[in-house]
Every structure is written in C-alpha cells, then in structure tokens.
Image (cartoon, rainbow, N blue to C red; front, top):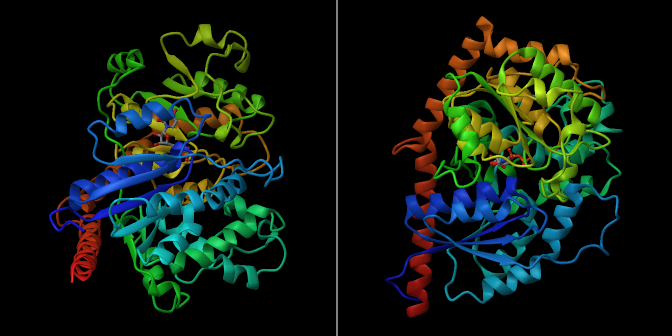
Length: 483
Ligand code: UDP
C-alpha cells in the first residue's frame, strides 16, 4: 500500500436513476469533503435513455471512477409477473459474484464499502474481505425505522398490513397507517415482502447507515433510531444523516428551449409536473390531470409518459424512446388550447435545471425522495401525488409533519383524482393565502438543509466523522501491511 495515496471508498448502486443519482452525489461528497478516492460500481440499465446523459453530467468534472458491472440475466429466476422491487432484489443478489470479483481485483484495499438499499446482500462481500461496511438509504428516517422494524411487525401483526384497523406502532416514531405502507408490504404472500423483511434483518448488520436527509428534518425519528430501547440491536448501528445531497444544475445541454421558455415566465408562476423515473398514470387519470391543469389557469410543464392500464411504476424497466405521438393521451384539443401556457415534455426532463429555476412555483410530484429533496432545497412547495415504493409515507411526512405540501384527499386510493380537486390543489398553493404559508415553511427547511451541509452543520460533521474513522482504520491497515 502506497502511504502517499489516499484512502479509497467503494460504492455499489442498484439500477434505476432514482438509485444511481443519490449514489453519484454521495461519491462526489466523499471526494470533496473527505478528500478520498471513490469508485462507484453500478449496474447499467439498458432501458433508460436518460442514463448516459445523467452519467455524463455527473462526470463533469470527473471526481469519481465509475465502473459498470454487466447486468446478470435474471429472466429464468423470476416470475414474469414479478414486481419492480423483486426484480431489483434478485438482480442485486445475482450481481454479488461480479461485485466480489471486481472489488478483489482493485489495486487498492478499500477503506469502506457502501451499498444501497437493494444491495444489502453484498454487505457479506465486505465482511468476507474484512472491509468496513455501510448501507446508504437515500430516503427519510421514518422509512428506515419502518424497514428495520418490519421483522417485529411481522410477528405482532396478524393478517395483511393493509387490512389493519389501527395504525402500526413503531416505538418513538409516527405510526404507519395501513394505507401508507411501502409497496413490498402490500401483500405478505408476495416475494417482494420476504425480500423486504430480509432488509430489516440485514441493514442492522452494517457498521453504519448513511442517509440522504438531515437531522433537523426529523429530529424525533432520529432520536428514536438512536434510542437504546429501540430494538436494542438496531441501536448499535450508528445512523449518519449526511444530506440533503442533490445534483447541481450545470450547463443545460439538451432541452435548453425549455429553460428559455421558463426565463420568459413570471417568478413562481409555473407548475412542474413529474412522476419520477418510473411513474405512469392510467389514461383516465391523465385526462383528469390535463383538465385540472387547464382549469387551474396556471402555467405548467408536464413530463408525460405513455399511459398504462393502471397508475403505477410500469416505466421503471421499460422506458420508451419518447418519440411516440402524445396527442391521444389528452382531452380533445388540449395541446392547441394550452399553447404558450403549458409545455408537455415526453419521457424525461432536465428536472434539476427546472427545479432550480425561479419561475417554478410548485412541484406536483410522485414524492420520490430525490424529487422531494430537489423541491425542498429549491424552496418549492409540493403537491404530493404518491404512486409507488415508500412514496405514500413521504407524502404524509411532507403534508402532516413538515407542512410543505398539499395532497389529494383520496390518494392513496383506487379512484381517479378528479379535475376539480387537481384544480383546487394547484390554486391552494399558487393563488390562496395558504400557499404563502406553505412557501414560507419550505424556505425555512431549505435554509435548515443548507445549514446542515455547511461547515459545522450536522450533515457536514457526520460526513467528516465518518471520513476520519475510515482514514484512521485505513492508516492502521496500511502500517500493518508494511510491518
Ligand atoms: N428526473 C429527471 N427528469 C425526469 C424525471 C426524473 O431528471 O423527467 C430525476 C429527478 O430529478 C430525480 C430522479 O430522476 O433526481 C428521480 O428520483 P426520485 O427519487 O424522485 O424518484 P424515482 O424515480 O426513484 O421514483
């Protein structure tokens, strides 16, 4: 080991831009704040047209080494009906040999290995190699609390979680209402439930948990997670909230017309509508949303995907090329009527540029955690429209705990959200007095997040403390190797 070189950290990202983006940001943060070298292993997704572009901008300037592991063929291992979560879990299980081989072949010995939520089976790889091991949860503390508490709930709760009459209690945390549970808990007989249950066992075996959030956002839940009474075993794992990490808007690249259009709109006048990298709506819901946007008489940008039979995460593994004719997705004459007022963007938008633009006044979002952070750190209120994963919990956190969002009354529910309600929610934020209150609160959170990241802030301190720990053990190992 070369004592003049730097400690090196290895990250493993699961597929999907919602997973890769926060891992890339964590890598950059470790390089810039701890002055380490970072290698990121990722599993490429050949369905995402936006991935090369995201990687390109993450590499400018090049701070981390990024290595793509070849995606294993899992088709014979899963049911064709398997959920997105199950596919991710199985894929990340099958990637282990390749990850092991890749880490063993590195010219340096990593000071730490950090895996994401779907990669916890690779903690075993770090253990076998005798390397410090961490899990990175790019979500909030309440979600983490539920995840590690599921093995207990599994014993305590009889019958389906979604059919319970009472919210499910987690010590020291906000209870989880049956209709809020994460997707893998919707059906206890489905494979994704047993995979998720396994997470609850595996996460606490790490040497620490990094989170893309910050202490002051959820002080009570972080308190509960650190309480010795909270599950005992969990309390032994230190939790490091090191966020809010999010991409910076660099040069705009493609789609600059969109930003030119935004330049011409008044301050805080545009509704931005997007359902993340995987969200889709039913045709019926798209028609209502189109009417709602039109009736609100506000300007808007809407990232549009091909409708699916039912609202869900169908686009995750199957993104189209964006070239399809969209006119059939909207009410008759919609595209003509909204000219100059609204823009529809097929498939993918430069969200980070849009969210940083002063003309954006509200984000109608599926509440994926990256989108939530991008909205809060830009000081933009949210209309919470949860669809999949842990988004129903995120929506509750935003509306009931943090007061930075409004949400449809009947979501999550089977029914379609009607145009009148969509119109009303948009106007509540863009026009009504209530909107300025919400805007004020989200700005306070924006400041609180910045404070956490700046020198001396909680997230800064947690990241530096981790860096110091890694550096110390790396130096000890290096000197042991030499002697
Ligand atoms: N994103 C984007 N353009 C889009 C849709 C998504 O740039 O049209 C980015 C968004 O800025 C965020 C990520 O993709 O960083 C999506 O992550 P999130 O956690 O919000 O949702 P997920 O896709 O994981 O459900």
